[in-house]
Image 1 (cartoon, one colour):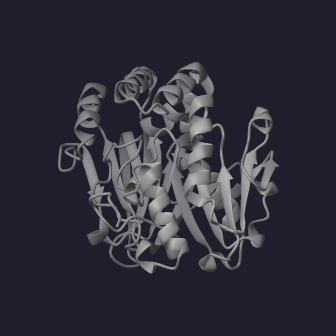
Image 2: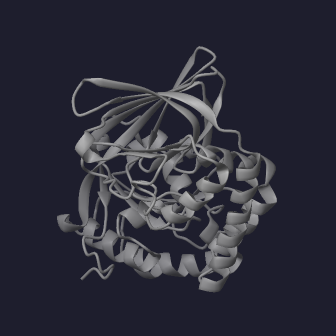
Length: 358
């Protein structure tokens, strides 16, 4: 364990916002990782300065303040959004394949950590310590998604590990980020609770905001191109798109199984497109999607690994900006092109489906 390890801590993450949760997390970190001789803790700057009791703590205002070249291992305390932000800096490294990424789930949804069979901090600590001790059973290489966003003749490239959602999915995130900020804060507060009842309260509030988005959402038409099984591109116009997901993980939105066959390490995207349906029927599909039971239903097009999708292009037919989220982070574009980068990230995971690593 002599290699340099960086702990990147997002104090705004749902599971760390409450003072009592943060106090417990500091105890957890010292208990589980105090043996790391060469570890640096990067803590988001703010009021946390007055209460942080971690050894060798550095404070940062922006993720780019962190010297990513200096460290070999990166442990992220946060949710999918924190991972998304850190990925943009990690991808700048020429030696990315030599780095190791670990996740301690502290977010509202944590779809990426759930895909890695890491449901909580205790399982995360066990897997991370095993991996840092050289047990390769706890590491694997996973794919990275690259999204090229085009708007107003500007191209921006972003990277993601989880799911991208367009249509109602992007509209929900936009409303939570811009119109329903108090609701988002309440949801994050409750989802950070360990109490299952309080978590369900948070989920209910989220569903209410989803209902609001459903009422206000206006479906649009998209031109979708995918490379189906080879370099042969299939181009289709989808009318009145309700939901469009390009994903490396099975779930989105904290457990909704939109792409139930997706895998992080098979070299392909899963794509799910729900179109040309009524809003009422869309609600019923969303309910079915909680268990992945929407696949095969009317209005649902699903492409999984047997279709071998490595590239997907989505363009709005009205040439206007459309809303989307990349692993829960809001973005918009007139056109977006997705490309898979196979097995470029070395990540810590739990190889035991029972969630009880030995």
